Amino acid sequence: MDNAHSGLRSAAVFALCGLFAVLAVGLAALSGGVYRAAALDSDQNYVRRTALSYLVNQVRRADAGGGVAVGSFGGAGALALTEEVDGTPYVTVLYCYDGELRELYAEAGSGLGPGDGIPVLELQALELEAEDGLLTITVTAPDGETAAASLAPRCGLEEVGAL
Image (tube, rainbow, N blue to C red; front, side, top):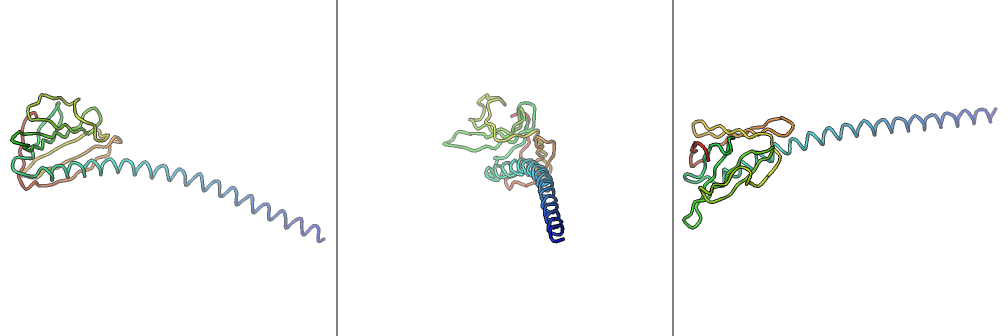
């Protein structure tokens, strides 16, 4: 009888170990899927947050008389941030082209085009709206999700045509 009781105990221990192993594997598989989804969401959120932060900080940096303008560049909305270096005007154009947020820094009137800018980060679209001195920047990440920020440059905001 002790042998039967001992065998039954061993079978119960093995069954519990097997159940634990099955549950552990299932939990690991489930948590891997949750992690991947959270990481993807975090990456897309990172793109939106970073793009907005970059654009807002560039506007703040250029916030001086006549330094901030909204217009179009290559047929799309663009920010033009102007500064003077040794008496020569230079412009930083921030725009979306070919699925990327780009920056082009050049002497004003250089004749460079949208393909000449340096890619900053992947971005599907950039929309700019200027109304009553308030600039609203809306970015669209590669996944199609949008985010927006509004700011009012102290120097004012100029609306121009093509940059």
